Image (cartoon, rainbow, N blue to C red; front, side, top):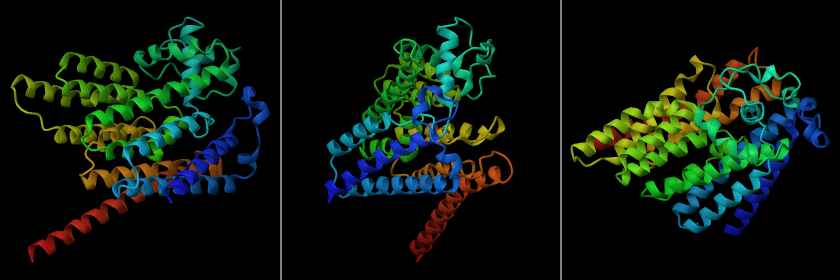
Length: 378
């Protein structure tokens, strides 16, 4: 049975990889031979397929959690599943759900090829650049910090001027940080279930291994900082937090926790790490929930709080709410797939599908807790 389930899972990953290439932009000349009009001609079918893929992925995810708890999967099995997931999805089309990775490539090109300051010069100013035909947001200066720009030097130069190899080098960078975060969570957590909860979470997998978002790099340095705190290397811990902050700035919210841990160490007071991880979860949830003030809640933002939420797996409220968001956020893409517009009823549907599962989950937990209290009081 285990072999059958694992076999079906990897067939599923291959189908997801294949399906991702339906989303190739018509202006992306580098993949012209693979372009099809399927998603534009069959929006309803595309949406249904995507919804089914997400549901199936969560079924596999929950099944793996159940199998691990019942000791039908070993740590070694889970590690192999994580590595093979990363390997297969590395070959998926990275702009299936978001075009951010194109911005990463173009910003690095502005910096390292044109030798311009990406915080002053917009990519659109290089009017003859072929990447402009399919890159979204080219009329903006760099949105990410200098730490991220510095990290992109490796995938950019190893691309040797070839767009396709450069693009997949950026995916490789994301894959590296995905595995590195999995390793750090394994080092920090006392329960291996935390690794499974994070590394096989469908939202984390899709937004990192398919979409190649740099949030995983930001969280790597933040988590590495906590790991160094555990090893009593305070200065290096703060250095890594600063690097994290200058990738995407959101981890600035973690400064109070890092300062608090430092204070405890100075006073020689033992640190309650469960409280630390819970505090980090809450603090990283704040920029996530406030993100509509700047633009909107993007699904990959959930990686911010999920990275810490999995470190307190015994806190059922945090765990279930995190999983509810993981499930609901992936459906934010469906209205645009179906209608082809960001206007009209799309924003309302996106908000509804994002928060309805979370509210229902929260209500269920509160009712269950209330019933438990009544039973206890008898």
